[in-house]
Length: 171
Image 1 (cartoon, helix red, strand yellow):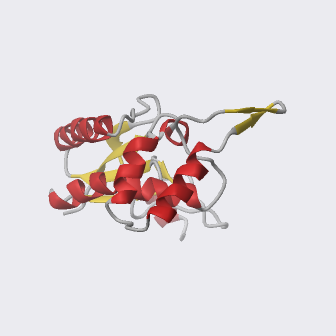
Image 2: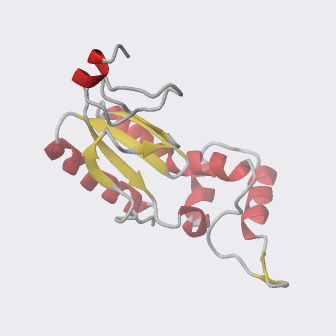
């Protein structure tokens, strides 16, 4: 079935709000070496430099390095597993997730499910950036869907011409 509705979810200030205890609990279930767990805890607790002053970090992950998206994957793995268990088609990178469904009603049910699942992790959906909507016109990691037959410019970008005008012009 061709899904034309997307549940486009962005988590509010995700990397600033990751709960250390929940993340360490998830990591401890996968990593038996206590030294690795202590090293990751030290990384999470490392201070934040703000205008030359080091401030203590009690939640969140340092951003900009390769470890933060990996830790996001560990933290959000249970959400992914639940979506898989329910048979949903989805894609997620770090805190951005798109779930493809067959109707707006199904999309609203999935959005409610995601609110519950993320709530258990003490995370909040950014309602201003998230939506249950048509896949057309929505971007995910800079990419979007186009309707079949949409006219394109000489550079390959879509134009506003209709199918009829593009067929008539030989494009």
